[in-house]
Structure formats: structure tokens, C-alpha cells
Length: 424
Image (tube, rainbow, N blue to C red; front, side, top):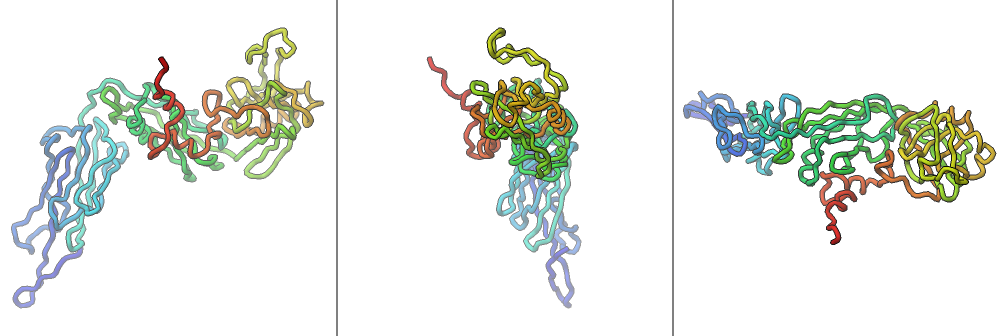
């Protein structure tokens, strides 16, 4: 280790060993350094030889999880260089270190009923390093309600457009409380991507990258909320983690003006298919949709989409090779009755129709989570939420505005609506 050499009578060398007093506490502090006054007999430099808890954490008692963790260097000759705090489940506590190294404090909440290990690194005025490791446990939670998180979709392999979902069993409305929840929903992708959560409503979040997921990626999501205080009545409960994978990058682009559907796989065009889309009054939605399901045979009835039975537009038929892209009933499917119009005119009631052979090929080629995009239709743009996954129709800035962690972000439409005064 580094030390300062002192020369006494006869040129003998002695070591001056530094000692820094540390305070480590949850809302209070601890500290220590020991020496008998003789630098030659001093123990090697350490971050703190006498560590004790005070304030909210008394000797022999568990720490209060609702108070911050603090580490303080009381000796002006020493400074803190690094602090890591992690519980037995591998959850790290984030924190801020003062510029002069005199103090560190946690910025994320501690969990109740958890055991933490804190590692403090320091150095003295001569740059000699020190280190202290301590452990403590937090008290059991006093709140009765537990916030559970259910992640979706189910484990499996999906297309690159598949968002992650997080369903909460209790509503969370306050922005600061949402931030506590959101920080604990950890997403890890390989290869790494830039992504964000978006609050769809008080009990549901979606996560997507800035762009589509990479092909053949592994995506893991877990909740680190267990034991963490959300509010006075609510604390995080246990949740099951989720791992999904992505397959090839498959994008199906439908141009309603040219009546062509072009399928791209990993950036290369692999097939063009003549199609028909929605006719006037039944225009197909523009924008990005995500494959929700594949149904070999579907009974389609006009009454389910608001067309009266017995009218000129009514229908009731079985349809083969139906690839669903909205919950309201928009599909890519076989339409042998309109083959003469496919590639030339739009005559459907909103679905993308093609020959039976082409529909079977499309059905066998795509998987849940693949991207189906429609352009140049006179229809409205696919809604972001509520009718499938239209998440990609929000640009990145608007998507991030729905995160509780975005600094100075505009409120999401859902939050704006909630805060708007009701007319009397």
C-alpha cells in the first residue's frame, strides 16, 4: 500500500498510517479508527475500524427500510471513493457521492425484510486505499397490501415487434410512486438495446426499445420490488421473472395504393403478394401492428363489427389461414372470393385479403410478435393501445413521455386525462 516515509534519528524509516472515520447509517451514523498513538504499531489503514449504527438503527435492532442509507467520512484527512450496497437477492441500491467524497446517500428505497451488504472504499490524504464491509438487515414490512407484477407475454420465441407488458394488481397513480415501481422493473437484453417503460394506465405498463428488438435476442425482465415501499399502504410483493427470445426479423409491409404486400426477412425481400385491403367506408388502419395470433379457421360475421345482418354489406363465412393483428377483428387471411381484385382494387371490409395459397404461406412464415405495417390507406392510424400492439406508432419522444422516469417529460395522454378537471 502507499505510505509516507518518516526519517528519525539515525535515518530510520517509520510509516505514518492514515485513518479515516466513517459513519454508516440509515438516517444516522457510525464510525471508528483505532491506534495506540504509535504509527509503527498502527494497524493497516482501513475505511473504519469502529462501525456502529445510531439514530433510527439502534444496537441490536433491525434497520428502518423507510429511511435512507448514509455513509459519512468524519475525518477531514480521508474521503469516500466508492460505495456499493446490495441485498441477498442481488438488488443494488443506487446512491449519490458528494464531490469531495465526504458523504454518500442512497437514492433508491431499501426493501423491508432484506439483508444488505455494504462495501465502502476510501483513501486518505496520501492516497492510501481503505475498505470496509458491513452487513445489516431491515425490519419486516408493516403495510398489508402487496403490489404484484405479472409480466407478459408468456415465455417463448416472438417476432421483433413484441412489446413486454407488466400488469399490476393494484393501481399506482402518483408519478413519484410510479417512478419507484418503474425503477424496479429491470429489463436486460442481449444484444443490449435502448428501451423504456410506458404507463398505459394505472395498472399496466408496456416496454419497447427505441427501434425493434434485434433478431435472435434474449430478453429478460424481472421485478426488484419485493419489500420496497411504494406508499403508506402498499409495498412490493414477489413476482415471477420472464425470459423471451426473438426469431428472425420479419416485416410485412402492405401498400394499400399498389395492392401489394411485401415480406422482408432479416432485411431481404423474400416475397411479394397481390392483396386487397379495405374499401371506402371500411378502410384498413394505417401504421404498425403486431401479429397477435394465428388461427387456422375463423368464423367471420359482419355483426361483430357493427354491420347489420341482412344489409348489403353483411357476411357470415369461415375463413382459412387467418393471422390476427387487432382484437377488433383485423386479419391477414385467405380471400378466394376476391382473387380477381387482388393486386388491382381494395374491396375488403378492412382485412388484408389474398389467395389461399399465399395466405397459407404467410401463415406459415410469420409468428406472434412479427410486424405488419400498412401504408397509403385512407384509414386512420392504428391506435397505440387497447386494440392490440400499436406501440410502435408512437415516436420515441412520445413513448418516453409515458415513463415516470423521464425528466421534465410531458404527461402521458392517460395521465393528462386523469388530471383534467371535470366540467360541472
